[in-house]
Length: 478
Ligand SMILES: [Zn+2]
Image 1: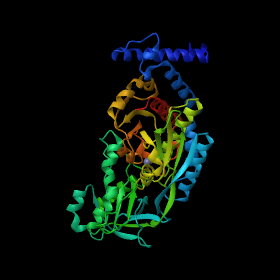
Image 2 (image 1 turned 60 degrees about the vertical axis):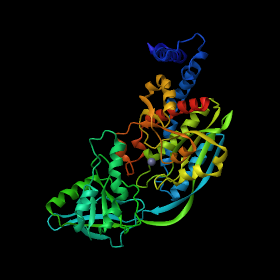
Image 3 (image 1 turned 180 degrees about the horizontal axis):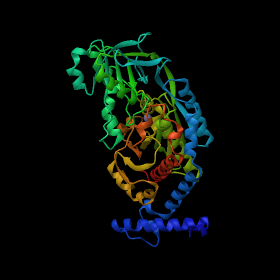
Image 4 (image 1 turned 90 degrees about the vertical axis):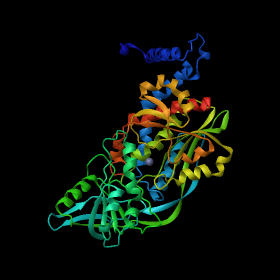
């Protein structure tokens, strides 16, 4: 039947269905539908619905978010302080200027520069089992091994308690943290959070007992040959030793060989180092509010990435969505009352200097950030929305009537991100769109985080939904 409808008639029918969907909500909230719908809550007014439909139609027809993502990832990995990160600053500034946003500018950020270097190799050598290469990568912030590498026996542990119990055999050896992400934890970010402590703190904990280096099992549910990098930190009270991630397949191999030959040795060579800090930048574009230009709704992602792949999910996706949100609002002819601002933060991965510099900048003195949203959970299909203020989450719930068919199952308390966290103490409400995340750690911080791992339609749905929510907030305030 739909085939016989014209585009306009189909739209009218869609509007009708959506209105029908909202009727039970109105009834539940004790709000009677009126002939003149001015008395309806703003979230339910048909004129807003029409705007939402325009945003949705434009977004899903054009899928521009993915085009932006492809351009950003075409630069390759964008390690903080690298020439590639500089290119990403220039590219996203010109991308936003090309969209005709009201203002586009950069703000300087002083960042550290860690360099991976060329040589990253590891071998497991056993008099009983032979020799096998291990797929490894240095962890961000780590120092490198001596030029000829480190060769030592291995102590395998699955917890810091086990490390402590084995401390007498640690001196002179490589500590191997073989701690898989817990498969029984349904929420992958929770499983990641528990396993990541060994990557972050493992080197200093092992160095305290005299270890020469550490190998950390990569944080992914998959078993494959791709090492996953990430940030590690040194505790000043312990000696500094090299830290590397080993692929999950490599970790399994090493574990099994250690059962047969506990005396085997691992040889490891990395060539990473710290260089002098450099000046980089946050990149900012905005649609200036027509009535309250100093009141801001922010949507951001981080422009830097790890360097083993082009950082498509993490976090070209967040940057692309932020640009697309503004583009969708502008192209549908909407003129928000408050300013809608896209920020590509620099240096999330090495500790969030861009986010702190943004919040502390003199430019912020005249501005009031009502809501800040950061997209840094990958580019997969949306499942929910979270805001740090419960009353705002509640106020947005009527929008579920529109957003449900687009994939949003819930709106609840939560949300935030490394780069927007410093705005919280200024009274800003933090938030974010939560995408499906079961596969996110397959790609995260590895060579697999490529544009092909992101689906254009799923990414666009993120932008479409956020454009609706952000436009609504820019009109209504908080
Ligand atoms: Zn990220």
